[in-house]
Length: 403
Figure (spheres, one colour):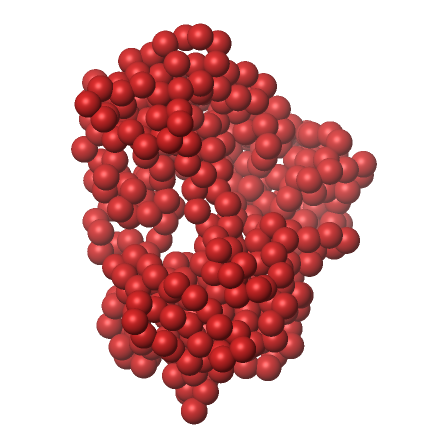
């Protein structure tokens, strides 16, 4: 009987094993996770869960009974220390597990501040796991002073939740503007105004020089412009990196993640990868996507291919972010855009449409689900509407789908 092993019990790993069973795979399946808890959703951790609006039970992707019912062996709190591709085994503690096919859904890890500048002080947090957010929860209280390092979506979402809890928030971003790496200036302007309206002190073009502490706990920060701040806790949101240590030790090809082909297979024919950790062919280059939809879709495609489907993975990128009462929905990838078209909606809704020449690449929609959905469908269909029609707020977007 074949044994398929999956390392990484996050969104991608859980999706992959469920799809294997749905496809009718009747061999052994083992899902191995470092955390001592069944697979759960990460996006609500720093929002609904931290705010106390979502109970722990609602975080779980599936009831733990699902895995038993589907004859999927869960090994939790069990970090894998080695993969031996020649022997087709993985080492977990003192145990050695044999596999016929192996999938790596190891995800990504947050960048941390170096200990040399105070990153190891108590009260300095990252936002990635349930344990991270549980550790942070007692610090997020009315009247506390927080420094958030990084003006990407993680940092901005953390700022929004902290302000909702009455925390005095200062956010620093080394780049010229928040969201510079991922969004156009118009989107940056929208969220800068939103956060400042909610009392966040945003400082752009300013970084963190060092943290200072008292009794081993962070108590202050010195910024690169010389400003000194008193802080009670710090949230670090300076990006994530793919978790590739196991793959590297096993000798797999690495290129901005675990290098896979269009089917999700690594440089070893019996080892696959999906989710944040996987870098796959896309157009004339390679791409690694950090999103829940990609984790699900790519993992399900890999599950199909582990069973012989020989199906290429075609991404349909979309993302979202919730901040205060604004829901941002993003369709497509804006890489290579040379102009942005603004469309105003009702009740303060707005969307920004990215074009490269006349070709529509992506849409950022703020509280405008209609613009997002139509933009997404246009992008997936390879259709590029006239920019002037997009900009005309009274125009019928839906009609563009039939054009």
